[in-house]
Length: 228
Ligand code: ADP
Ligand code: ADP
Image (cartoon, rainbow, N blue to C red; front, side):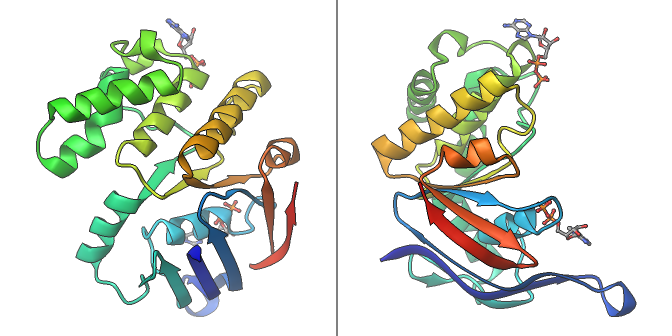
């Protein structure tokens, strides 16, 4: 069955004369284990959609179901808990804490959620850094890492709480071609090995082609979907 299902999703910003309707009845389903690219021109609503799917913002109307739960009717406390347990985020700008080490950055969200830093979290953090090829950068502060390395730390951080779904908003947008390719290869490898579902927004067709499925957003709706 579907991991995620949104139906007739509408999102408007502003009111009255300033009202902009960004999503106009968008439908999307993601099956467990899918690796999908979310394509669309700048301003087409990709970030808006990812923000809603990440439960960071509610849609104006429409249905949003993930893991069988109706998230449009859930209250803020339940949404926060749901998000922490089931969803990981990767952004265009890595958003690492600059004076913290790679390991500290990876375990930070779980340490905040748990109220302390546990031995188990440090072990998992080290294992994840090894998985993204940064075992020799564990104790480097973030400012000493290259752009591609920082994004790999951000991917490790997104995986820390074993989310079913990882949402990535232009994760390669700030990287050169070589680092971008490496980051996409890493995502594909994690997707293969762990059945983690990824939805990756990009305006770059070459990046999108490296994903197994492409979802195009145009004029606030799902325009087309293809498989490669
Ligand atoms: P994309 O990620 O595809 O570039 P966005 O979701 O960022 O698209 O933006 C879609 C449209 O919504 C744009 O026209 C943008 O200006 C508008 N928009 C985004 N966020 C807000 C906001 N908080 N308030 C008003 N308009 C917004
Ligand atoms: P970003 O643009 O994401 O901050 P960059 O790859 O441009 O990342 O690197 C930022 C700075 O870090 C640059 O000044 C670069 O020279 C430096 N840098 C990159 N890799 C290393 C490294 N391994 N050790 C020390 N400094 C590095």
